[in-house]
Amino acid sequence: MAEVLSAKCSCCKKSGIAQCDGCANGFCSTHFREHRHYLDTKFAQLLHDRSILPHQLVDYSSKIKQAQLKTLPHDINQWEEQALKSVTQTAERVRNRIKELMTLRTSTIKADLDQISIELRKRKFENNYFEQDIKHLSEKLDQIQIDLNIHKTRVKMTIPPIKLNSQF
Image 1 (cartoon, rainbow, N blue to C red):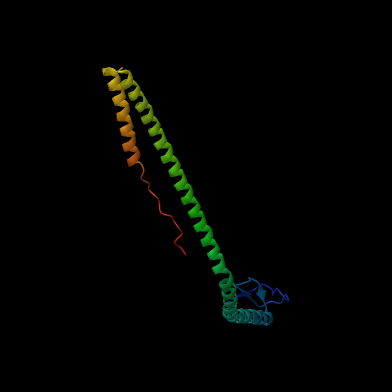
Image 2 (cartoon, rainbow, N blue to C red):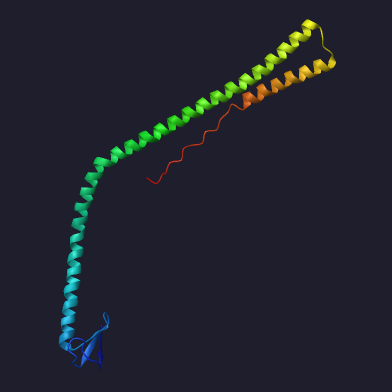
């Protein structure tokens, strides 16, 4: 800590001093002792301040816990309600959209089938059909059958899991 120098004391300008490694100031023997006493006092205060902190931490922690125990459950319940409401609303929108799509697709297939039925009845009533007509109407019926099969197989849904932050 101390080194003997031939410089002057930073307090009184006397010679025969030591230099403090911490602040790099030079001191005479009297002022060096005072400086050491000052450092000892500051260090003792630091130790005292540190010894008080655990008690303050316990008090702080207790007060925070009490305050949070009152508000956090309410906040968590509110978050839970909002999350459930959001999931419920999203599920309802998806259900409605699926119903709309299924109804639309079914209506389209039914309209195509009705149109072919009318054409078949008309041609039978008029006795007006040939090989090409039968082939064309058969292709239309086959297409409706394909659409029905696709419609059946596509009514599957993959619902991704909800990813929640698992760090809690």
